[in-house]
Length: 199
Image (cartoon, rainbow, N blue to C red; front, side):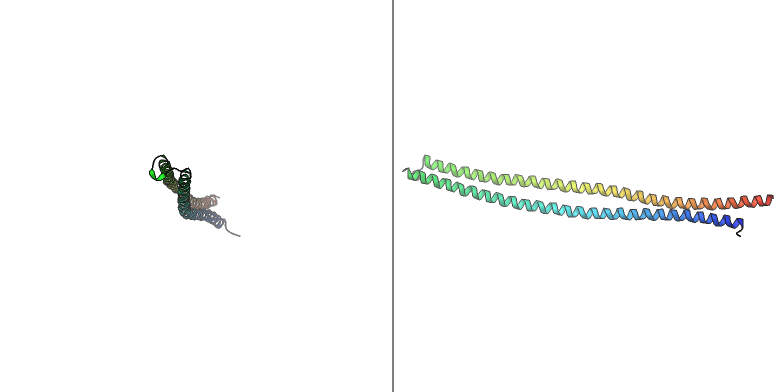
């Protein structure tokens, strides 16, 4: 049979150990959560870098396609303009008008050529404007992406710090619980000793 004072000591030690162990487990769980949050932050930064590169590649591809389309449209416009001027020349020639002398027929063909060139320049100008708008949009998309990542990282950092504080609190709570259990066992033994002396 275990003596009563020994039983108090064993019970107090068991309570203290259980309390301390609970605190350590809580701290380790918080540390695991902190590690997971830090890993998530690293993953999100890497993903944002990939997304930024993809935005840049998409922009470059779209610019290349748009430039090729503008060049093609300009060439087709000029070709059609030359065909119209050729048709005008043939029509004037068939009607017996001497176009080499200048005058209205030559002016008409010159005006057609000017109109075609003005339209070709407008295609080039529009392409420049669209390119600048696309570049501005790319910049806005990248800024939004970076701001979103910064916000996510700030949130993850706050959560990680909170987990660290919770782990520290859990360990301190376990230590206080262990001290309380030890003090309770000591007090119970002293009470027992006093009662035994009083008998």
